[in-house]
Picture 1 (tube, rainbow, N blue to C red):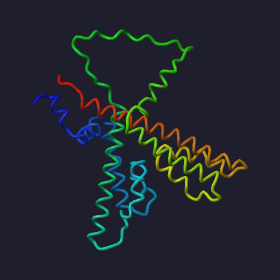
Picture 2 (cartoon, rainbow, N blue to C red; picture 1 turned 180 degrees about the vertical axis):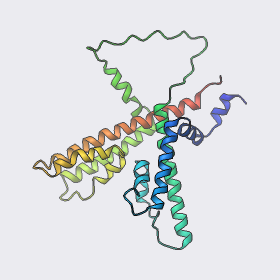
Picture 3 (cartoon, rainbow, N blue to C red; picture 1 turned 30 degrees about the horizontal axis):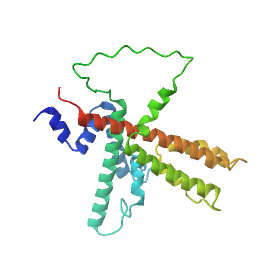
Picture 4 (tube, rainbow, N blue to C red; picture 1 turned 60 degrees about the horizontal axis):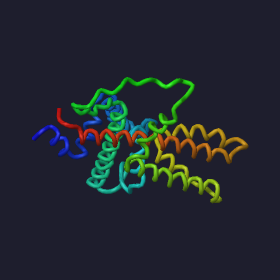
Length: 241
């Protein structure tokens, strides 16, 4: 079996695991997550107990809606199974985030056909004439694959519900938690930026600032997911050398 056929036969989890472990940045991230899990179990009452949840966001926040996890009451077997499932879910979230980080820092390795001509040297564009195509190229991974597009749909639904609750309903309650979780971890910056307006005379501006910030955080996350999808596709179609 050739290397190309072997790469095509590898399941997606194998390629995801390769991206999550083939560079020191991703391995360092996994080491930090593992250390935070150890701290959480050793010091459950400390302020660092929420570290694993924040480090593996936003996917880890999906576990909030599950009816079981650490602290589940029941027999010893039920508690062990609930905690084990939660740890496995956290590990999966960490692997996905590490793969995204690996896709971000990895250099493209697309092979060029043997008979093709070498590309011409790139001529930099003048500084006074910025190319709008560069911005489109940076944002393209957020919309050219189903993984990133599906994530953007979730972000749009969370933002729409939050804006409706903030400006239409008499009491918004905790509606902001959904866009905060959907676009974490960068949505924490949006929360910090919108907090001052909440305690000023321009209280109506706080939800708008928060919505814009979380939208940008969601777009950035979608770009990262798109780059991950591209890297997985490249690994699947990489020809034999």
